[in-house]
Image (cartoon, rainbow, N blue to C red; front, side):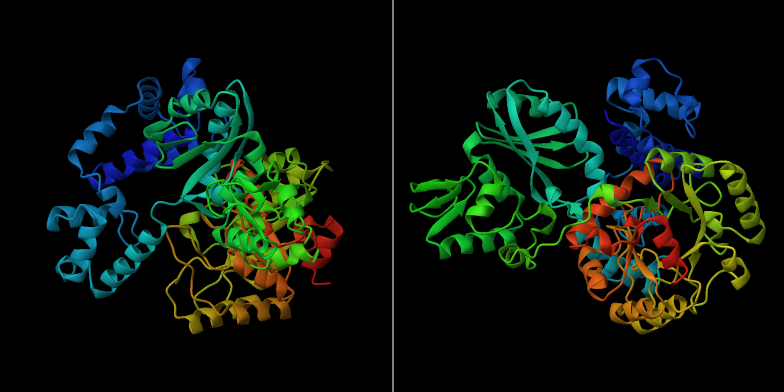
Length: 580
């Protein structure tokens, strides 16, 4: 059982406990434990097997340690099983609707019998919800919008969450004797921000053995289908995995086809038809009958994607660009960009420590960035208005800088910049004084409140903040949280113009729950002449690993290393921050 799966059980226990009216401190402990174990690098099942004391893990008390140990050893958590008998499981979907927390879900269930999202929608539309205390017309309107957002995202998993469970599965499958090739295709390979299912293409001497290895994998919750060439399962996380075993000579054709996207494949097939050929998942053929099945014709290319692209007169197109947005034309003209690579990144300029709402200390974050080989980094804890995040006031900022000076005394392996993520207030002013800003090397500004403002007012607010002379970066520009909070309404043309005027970079926030700006807008920012920062917004050492996720989104946006400020040497970064 993976750490991510254990964390999901604890999150489920927390939600059901809160809906059932359990002690709020116990509920918070479950949530904190879930977050801790999700970020823990050591597999919990290894700790349990070794008889380790789980209470030595920060945030894990005796009671939770026993629950986790029982879960790992038996595959079940008795307290969770009992709650699932008491509380309708459908309420776990209801609480995913924006505007409906566990307490509201409990009220709706007990007062109106609401136990599903469909029943919630019906109660909102027929006016029954407004009869309850605290559920006015505005609240109901927000719930209906939340239902629309929930349905748009249902069945899709965050890319960062897929990464956490997929590595172990791939290691398991690649260890099967006789597996010659095995690659992930689909939207995962294109690095789309959310994934509906996982497509795996493989070549194996014994397809049946590979299929058996998948269906017997310990995180498989259900076998959806099993055959000679295709096997489908559903993991405990709800993610569907489809395995296709193909002949070695067809591997390139199958990988290309199942990687997609649909729009990209249509353009490739059209290019083949213009030459009197046809392209399918078996490869590129001259003559024969077009379609999914191989029906005659002379095989022109199929073993690798490279040779198929080359035969079509195209440069190899990286999977991240296969979106039907001009990449085929660019490949034909030899005009594809040299996309940014993970190794191009020299530093991370957005992270949080225990000085605000981070889970690891300042020194731990510094040591982790040194281990990553970074040339520079910035500590950017929250400003003071975010009281729940423990934001920095004048006194805390002075103490943080004193600690940083002490930590860095005599160290020359990394440069640490003094920064802050400053809240943009409702009127567009900044949440710190100019005197505070003068003591910072890098200033990030972002929206953390009043998300529902109309576009004109929201844009005016953001533009005012961006024109402050000390601002360097506009962080997570749309304020979205995937599957939880929709983007704020902004006129991005006006926002980009303000950034350009004041030499402010836009951030691509690499946090798996944000990935903000989205790729389309990120590409537009670069085309508007803006520089981009890729920041992890890490709240723990583990969170720093999101940089690769951010780079993959930058690649989807056609960005090169030259488009991204934190691929540049320190001297150039400092010059940019000084607006030189």
